Amino acid sequence: MQWTIGRVKITGITESETVGSTRFILPQAGNEEIRKLPWLIPHFATEEGRLKMSIHSLVVETPDHRIVVDTGLGNDKEGRGVPTWNNRKGPYLETMAAAGFPVESIDTVLCTHLHVDHVGWNTRLVDGRWVPTFPNARYLFGRTEYEHWRDHSDTADKVAVFTDSVQPIVDAGRAELIASDASLTDEISLIPTPGHSPGHMSVLISSEGEEALLTGDVAHHPCQMAHLGWSSTADSDPAQSAETRMALFSRFADTPTLVIGGHFSAGHIKRDGDGFKFVALG
Ligand SMILES: [Zn+2]
Image (cartoon, rainbow, N blue to C red; front, side, top):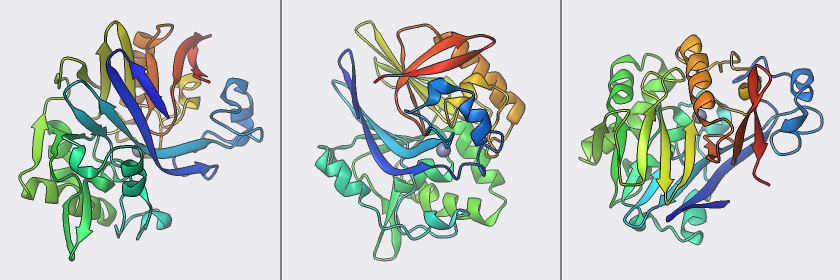
């Protein structure tokens, strides 16, 4: 998976892909409902109406920077609510290196938000300690997002995520807390998109007249473009999440802007009746 936006290159690094078993995250997206949205098939759902989703990082290369957006689940993590997210031994770092991105080459890590499947590879386990995976990177966390999870990680699984994948970055002096609407480089700026989490941010890339939007988890799946009210069980504020979808999709619908999800691949947003649909790139 690779896309070019002017002088910026975006590469997808997949950590895991799933088909179905998504009721826990999108309870309204049953097979029957999904089959009523034929534009989802085959890229984003199967003929039977099961959702296709992935957990991935996006490596964004500008003329001056090499940025990893979101860092998946990570290896060796424990205390996760989803059983298969514990004690993983996946080849993520090997995949990254094979794609041309050894960990040393990354200068920036950006987390759209601080949920379990977006911060995992911030750290790795070395001699029993969690250390920054990307030794030369500054890690950018939204200030609102960071302060929320610092103060309100109130269940065991959330404490585990913060303790093994966020706090060690701060302790190592690698974290920078940024505004949700910050500009990172000439090409990259952030759009505040709260609702899924309190400080959630999306990433806008602009170069030489071309644009891409990395939505993060504004939507977990393109079916939420047709059903803006289908908030996910992980959304901290379901009503705000739906409002954010309406605002963001309205802004980018029927434009040439390439849209890439936190859990789905690239396409374009189109207006469709009262809502929107998503047209895969190919
Ligand atoms: Zn996610």
